[in-house]
Image (cartoon, rainbow, N blue to C red; front, side, top):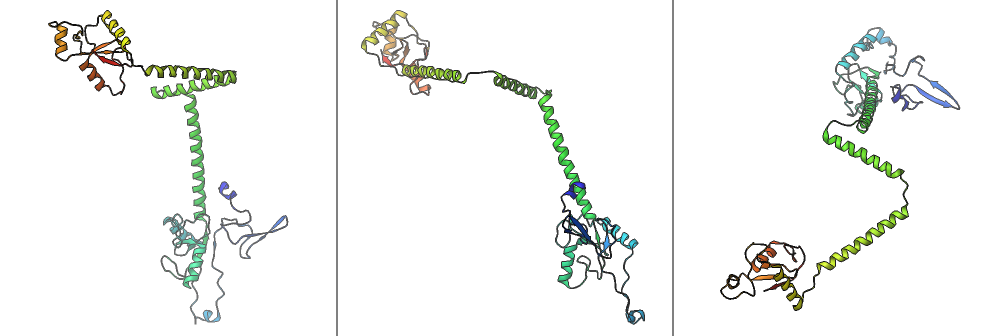
Length: 328
């Protein structure tokens, strides 16, 4: 309650509009209506209707009916109890359909509750004192503060809930940062975070020469570029000449390659004589292909391998190097 009251203007009380403060220099003078005692607080409930005039001569002689008597305090207590039972103060104003909050509210003798300003506007608009809900007329009005108390309690509860939530989240975050969880996956993440934190702290504490560090990075980049340039050169293999092909073929002959590494069947010998097995294979179309890397394959097998590989320039199935091929 004291938290919400601090936000109110010190010189103006919404709960009691009949109390006004006038500032004169450094002193404040309190002007109160003559019918209100000085010792009443801001939560005082009072009847808003003016004091009835004394009966006229005709009323005293019985010629004119006397006006209805004003409700006593006990009767107002019963009316307010009925209003509390109907939860009138917890519902919005029936005229403007807005919550009461801290705005002045009035209780009618028919136990209905409205904003004071809304009821006055309704009376000016209709031209008579008729309850907007039950159409009872006439009625008496009394200023109450039930909705203001409920609103303060609601604000205090929300403030406490937000504060407790903040404290709980802060406590839980501290627990997660300091206590290792039991779950394997969470424990692994916790230990990784701790290790990273220690590593960062160690790096911050170490004295490093920035110029030397940057020069090392430059040297590493230059060496990497040099290696990549060499690799690019190796990718582009120059086509061998006739002398190179004869030298490569002599290497194959010296090595004695007899089977195709892909299908594991016998290779045809280009120098085979008629009637031999190599000559028969040569006649059947199982011709051999010599690669520039000195490896020998069946032409059909190598064509199938190149069709299977998605690369436009496939590598040798044995040594993985780029090649040129020659049919022998």
